[in-house]
Length: 347
Image (cartoon, rainbow, N blue to C red; front, side):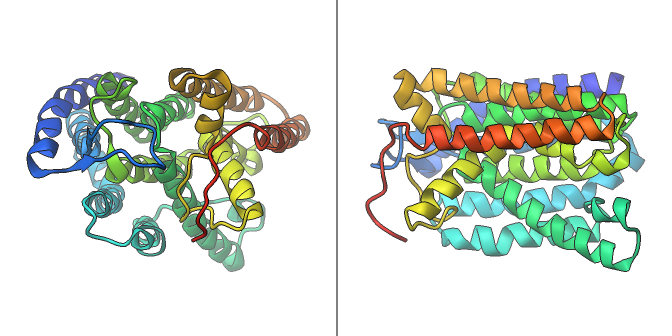
């Protein structure tokens, strides 16, 4: 518990303090996001805030973990660093955006696999070599999918950092319950760094995290989900439900735009637009801040639902999860009717 609290406090203070010089650096080197038809800000905004989050998490882990535990996070941070660097290069306009999705994200997933971190969904049900290969494939899809989800979630002041902070809180709670000190410490470090960055990123934002920060957070969220081993009344076979629920806000948004854009003939992850959940909520409630707070509330709802399911036997747990899936699809259908700015050019 002490390491977890230390990680949170150090991550919070380091990220909050480092964001100021990082903002000055971004302005000095011209790392600025200019307003555009597919963006919600109206003034040029410094990017590179993800660097403060990256350093905040790193410093928190170095301070709160001992040598043996730090060794276990080397592989994780190598993959996270790859994505942070690629994201910063993309923010700078030096890379084609598809390199992230089809190159950097799969490569980071492979680094996790080489570090011994993988999904254990099929292996828990049908132990054997085929199950291991199935879990390997699932790991690749999961890491790429969640990383991409957070990458495209960074489109409104405070949104991506806040959703990541909320998910990290519940990852820390579950990890503490199951005695996973490394996972709880990592989650607390991310929670602190994301919350510290929100001091400067919540509306009205003074700096954006950029794609380097969004992909960094998404990759760490995917990693925490793979490492989490929650203690459930339903047993190990239902453990895969918990990370999906904890990351429910990001998954919900990705589901909405994937269905919506596919129906309109667009590629979900390569076609930017103002058609995300927060965009639609902002149009409904005439307030970006309200939309972001509702996304936080959605993350909290899914996290609390995960806690509730953890105390249920297998049958009721799966029934609640199925009802949640139906509710998600129903809500997606309702939000499809909400006003949003439609893309006019196919990619």
